[in-house]
Length: 105
Picture (cartoon, rainbow, N blue to C red):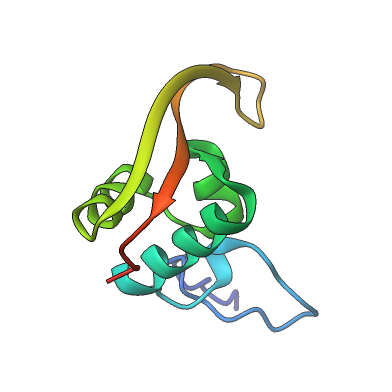
């Protein structure tokens, strides 16, 4: 008799070695996402939409950037074209930290 596979929910624990995939991480609150995004911007000064999704596991970076702006941070948006992992070009935001007066709130 075949075992049925459990549906993939994106919140499973990684049991075989180390996993950096966002699909295997525990749920991150918006506050945790804002803190991670602000920390990245303080170190690197800029991040693209795809970087935020792939590196930080933030699926709606525009929302987190707006929340950081609402907290007093000055973040500029520039538009650019960038290829995803499949090579398809996407117009996406490049967020640039101009000044950090607020926090991650």
